[in-house]
Figure 1 (cartoon, rainbow, N blue to C red):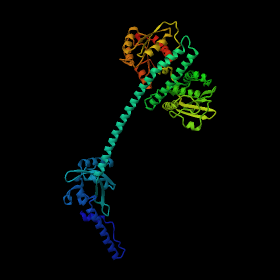
Figure 2: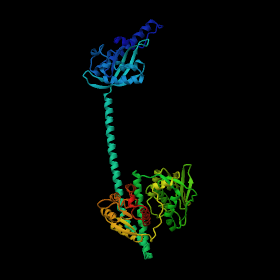
Figure 3: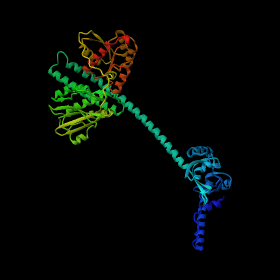
Figure 4: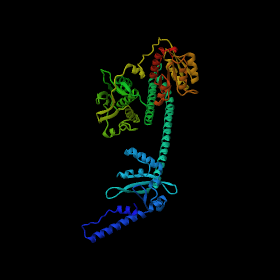
Length: 578
């Protein structure tokens, strides 16, 4: 087969034998002109490469575009080589193997691999590396078409090649830009994570720096409030103002730090089966004194059976206390606060806090749960930042629950939360989860117990000395650094140790670990008492081995109750057990 036979095969028009001879001759001439023009366009086009072969793959047509693209003259390749000889042999081997798997046939890694699909009537366009006369390589897009005679038999193949170098370069540049962007994103992520860590460290440091002076202010004010002889009415009023301002400042610090920690993604919760009646009783005990001062009547639901919900116990109490506190704060004088529990659906329980306050307009409801947007600030002079509801919303989301509100102006508001039910856990589960049962105060007649307090802040030492002085069953031993604390622990073997975290020399955590490594002192419960109050700090302390972790400012009753629990624990352990 030669160029003329291939050209004749491209002719699509045929004379109409039924027409007059002149017309037939005219159509034949016109068809030949079209065929000649097509042949001329194919052979002389420099914009694309055309290569035609016979049925065995030997090149019969090699146009100007092919000459320019591959560097050969037509005379150098016609009737001598196949297009496979101008291609990357390794790619042909890979293509043959891939086609053999795809089509279930054994295909040779040569010209057959180039045209196999086209020979089966399958449209075939793919990329292949071509090799120029000078040995240089370039990527080409190859389109293969089988040429057939009138009876459908294959008489050759037409291969159209397009240089894909420019596109490859663009793709390569895109990949480079993508890699660069990825590296930039990774760098930005690393910078953001570093900044986030710095932010957390700053918050932890700020918390410590703010809580340390607050500890002295609130601690001594609580002692003055209960001192003997009792303070005069004027002194009592001043003390009340100090306590009010101090506890309010602590609330603001806690809210801001909570929101920052939550939004940084560093807050971790422990979701477990929580007894709702127990939590509500604890919340009632904490919030009722605040309600009594304003003449607010509070009602809580009664439970005939156990009721457990899936939540983080501490964070659930935080949310409920916030809702109850708001219900009291924004209520009318001598109003009511009603806590109700209803079924939200078969899987969830709704806890509602209903008040008889002024209520909220539709616009105010739409602005709920926004930071620093305090409820009812236009209607009164109540203190607050509005952060509490935002924190509550974030906490409910982390507990896989929901929070919402409904209100009627002049009637009151209902704030509700929803949480999933949980199965009744075994008693051992409660012990494993560290839920302590209340321990009654130690009677004064009981033998004297020794408490070691390791603290470098003189004001904090003085405060705890005055608190413990009111406990006739306790003797206090103090140390102002971790090393002295370890020496005193080994020398006196106290019943309980109170340990500050930020100590000169070795930290409280290191001192605690060294005390627990000594068989003679390993049994002593060590309670952390620190201004490092971010949840991450508390978690690290508990994980390190502290018996309990208390934060400053000291809440006197909480400290005394924790000491009772620690003393009870210590009474059941001896050095031999550790």
